[in-house]
Amino acid sequence: MGNQPEINLFDPEVQQCPYDAYRELRDEAPVYNIPGTDMYVVSRYEHVREVLMDPARFPSSAADTQFRAGANDLERAKKVAERFEEKGWLPAPTLNGRDDPVHKQMRAMFNQAFKPSKIKEIDPQVENLAYELIDGFVDNGHCEWVSQFCIPLPLFIIGEQMGAKREDMWQIKRWTDAFFQRISFMLPEDQHLEMVDREIEAQHYFQPIFEKLRSEPDDSLISVLVNTVIEEWGRPLNDNELHAEMMADTFVGGSETTTNALAAGMKLLIGNKDVWQQLKFDPDKYMKTFVEEVVRLESPVQSLMRFAAEDTKLAGVTIPGGAMINVRFAAANRDERQFECPEKLDLDRPKAGAHMGFGSGVHHCLGAPLARRELTWGFTAVVDRFEDMWFADGKNDFSYHPHFLLRSLKQLHIEFEPKKP
Image 1 (cartoon, rainbow, N blue to C red):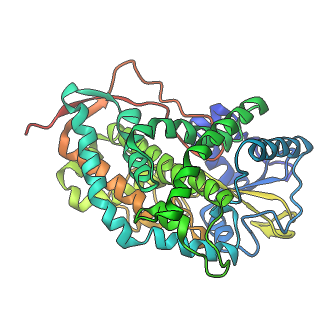
Image 2 (tube, rainbow, N blue to C red):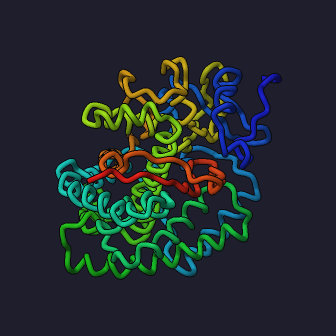
């Protein structure tokens, strides 16, 4: 492995546009050991799939392995845990960080909360909100698309389902941003602990909601999460488990990622006017594929982690037991071995849903059906309200938040011509 390329996925510059780096990894080092670490980046579609479909070889938790984190990392993790324990609740492992049988038992309860009939009930709210948001600024002829549309659409929907008041939503966004930054792998220790403090504020906001729902259940998603007894455990989720899920799987999983897909989709539409014309001409035919292509091309979740249960070979590379595996969905989604002309936004792409944007296997994204509804209604409202749109001159630098796992456009200033009624 002496000739492996030198690629630093922790470099904020590389993160701005990582796709060339991903191509180099796929071609030169499909299983890439990040120098000086026990982390291996997996970038080809077939290998990403292999890792995701084999949780016995590649578990989500390091519990049964001897993961060799550096002393500094362990020291910091200890400080973080102490801060949570002292001032709030130490978040338990999230659904994504658990393995079967525990994962399966917990997931069954989530499947109940997010079942298709439940998402169907929420659908009219999503539709109404998408139009309400656009109608709030359509007459201005311009907007900052991320803060005025992409953030509030999924945030208000999941917030309402989680028992939060609409007037508190921007405060909640500040808390979910803290979690987003805390898991970025990009923060110095003092900032990391500052984000923990912010997250603890969120815990104190949600704790009374949990307690109220225990005595007075209602039909919201959060009530299902608070009160459903997990059969094999003989109890519902405890406070530490609930707090972990609130941030990771409901707010960041359920709003942050959709926000980033809505932003990415608009940027792609403005950059590909032929696609915009196609979508506008026949949204019924093309909307579904458009949504899948946005998720494939820009992968709001660029990567997540797995571990090697024991020494194992992948793509001819020996990965030592206990090593961390960075599964790069975004690299797999542009793998030319799997997708023809992968860089192209193609509304006629066959099997457009075969991407890894929502993961695969037992950890396939729980919120995918809701995310697809939000993206569909979001862009349907765009087609219905905008004749045309373009980037506001001189106002965009198209920069992304530094993050090792997620892809998040900071702002998108657009101008548009409203459709004539």
